[in-house]
Length: 210
Image (cartoon, rainbow, N blue to C red; front, side, top):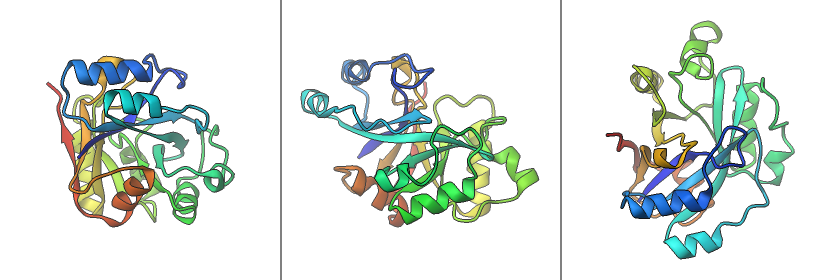
């Protein structure tokens, strides 16, 4: 099962894609995706209901978040009321260790994304801040990465023994599915996704960039 774990809709401040348009693009282009996760910037979108689109297009549409820490940006999967109340999602300088610990405590998982990206990725910050305890999974393939950013992320994962996932980081329709994560087991909901990321071993980052 293949899921794009990192995407943004118009609910993000810099997103320019409607969720329905992502679904239409996936089907029109016959992309090898079974679904995607909306990780809106600095917020938890508790209101949007995409079940009708799931039924219409036969895609799994899940919701996560992307928050900002002193080590760079971090994807959150398994957001619930406990996690929403654990820290301020709108802050630009959240302590990564606290985000990781809060996610673990609340039954979620924190996944640093685009680690090789300047300023907003964790690779450069490891040089000055050192490694962060509790990190288990990072995004090793990002569809918006440039130059050697993905290679740097892969090297970081190999150095510290992190598992790797992939996501497109799509902000426009045509970017959806550029990178994704392939799971051996079926993912039916967010609980399945969190369980696989935290405890499973049957997944890997994949790239469909042309």
